Length: 397
Image (cartoon, rainbow, N blue to C red):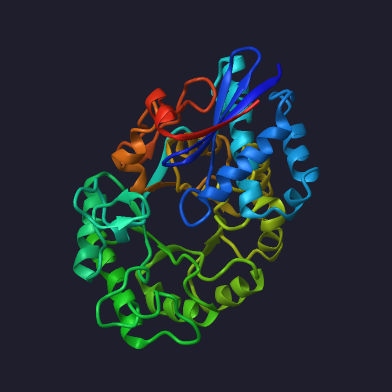
């Protein structure tokens, strides 16, 4: 089997469609459509597509190492390069599954998990389908939560939808009149007391809404430095936090070690750590309790499975980071079904919006806070014909 062409689509997500001489095509996603890298990811997918024409998509190790070692920048494992590698790799595994008529999880070792616990993610934007709410990126979300009462109501909505775990960033959204509004929610050196109190009250409101049994994950988007992350952690740890994600930027793992020594909350990071080399020190220092590699920006199935196995050696749990389109969700479910150190699946509020769900053939959603794994051959997801016709597209032959 040979790769004959690669179509690169830029729409809600950055998606590649890898085509072969046997008429089998596979879909993969680059996890960089949000933030400020969508154009770069689109272009990098085009650049890397040129390098795999004529290769056998069944040889995923060969293709991954070719893109990693023979592209000069690939060995630097930056987000844009690895995002393109991820999209192509996922598409090749999709082809493999379709070739053999089995879901990708069968090719990765088979299921160890069948009923994947799931949390409602980013509830500072509310929970539910947006209409006239505020815009976050390209998705019309339910609305920006500001007061503790807003956070209480958002948590209640998640519980009513069947979730027993939620994730929230309590410092992301500014409150008029407080320094969150003037500092862009970034805090350095010391946490202004009014802002610290508000963030704590927001978490307290979620705990009140969910009672003792709701698990609360704290997302911080690296908005804090080491000192302010410690201040916040010490203020909220009494509310039984499941884990704290990206308390500060992840390029210096020793900072996480300092934070870990000062608070009684497990730490997590991963969406801005790339390949096994980016996770190495976190694992060796055991500064993480939960690793969060993003299948669509850390190297696809070929690399992410290695990261998960490496984490298992250190008794570190895995929560795949998912903040993309339906292809990212379907691919994550395939890997999560396999790994024995799976902890929980992330279901972003953006993933339930029609602008996202209508891009692909299938709308996979959890039932009572649990996901079933797609059983179709490959990853079990494809762009619709209508979406492909709408998207900006470049074909590499």
